[in-house]
Image 1 (tube, rainbow, N blue to C red):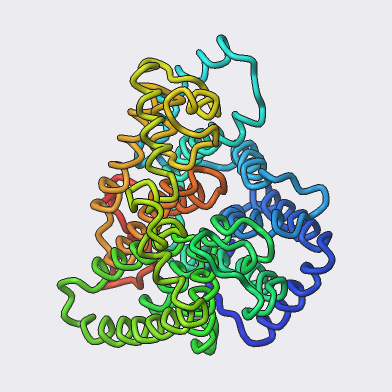
Image 2: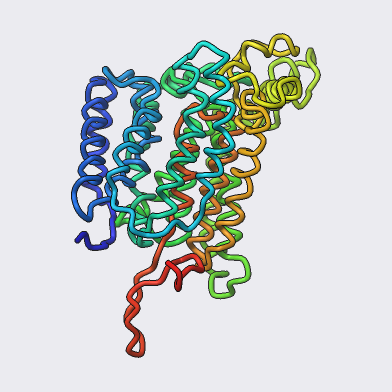
Length: 468
């Protein structure tokens, strides 16, 4: 039986991670080897008795490993490795020992809602594997994995380890972009997403993964569950993630993280008098350093950063273009509007996975893939997509309300928030949304000592103690 234990990194662990990251920057097969190790580790967790927690460790690492593999162009690693990996996990989990009763049935509802439009698409359209993998797989994976999480029971200590382990592959990512970025004096900072500061890779995806790192590190700091034995490293890493995230000029990942952190802190500290001092201590420190980092980054970019976050573009800043919701959202509002128009004309089953881009020009938009998952669900899945939206949106409220332990409630709310907000600027182009959503839905228990002769050794975090 695996015993619960605290997990912390020391300076030698960090040095090893940095060495691996450095090697991977110049020898991309290193990332391939790490992916192979991760998959083997996951399969061991499935088939070896009492090691199922290994599966969740690798799932938590997969968003970072996915982006790392993409930016390094790792050999034999497909672009959608994150989705392929989750399908491997889904199949492997069939062999898991699921003795506990399900605590919710939201996964079933999601699958039922999305299935009719997928069946109709198979009948009426030529099957396009790439479209299905990129667009339909994410929602299907959330639905299926929620079937598993509903029967899962993980100790809070192990859950915190899951969060900590998720950060490890993000460290070599930020090392990669640091090495690959030209000297800042040679970077052309304009009012658009900047690929020079992300090592030539997609700034939106880098912003997303750094936003995830910022969120997880903030959660660990707020709950005093530091990643490093020397917690000064947590703060250094947090603000370097923030600094590099700002320099991507891609706002979605950073803003999603900031909003999720605010929600986490409000739940964690609101109305808890004993936590007021800790709240003021950590919040003041993080805000002060965060403001300094943002101020420095803005100066470094000749004030272009602040203009970017105000929604300015080259055209609006020069006065040659009117500032509208569409310019502020980098055309995402127009994409969403055309998706809604497509939905209204294809109400029952939508136009099929990935097909909205082929219809968008007819509705006044550009022929580009969906960036907003909620509007994509409408246009490509019709009324079933609408049901999925309702389920995805309201299940977090139901689940967070059930959680009685304050820290667990705050963490779940933050992860759900990040997952949903991330889907509004990057749809399901990475598996960060899927991973955050399902991890937030894992039922936890807390180990407690025997009290007054009681035989209870653990207590579930949700209000399901008697019926678990």
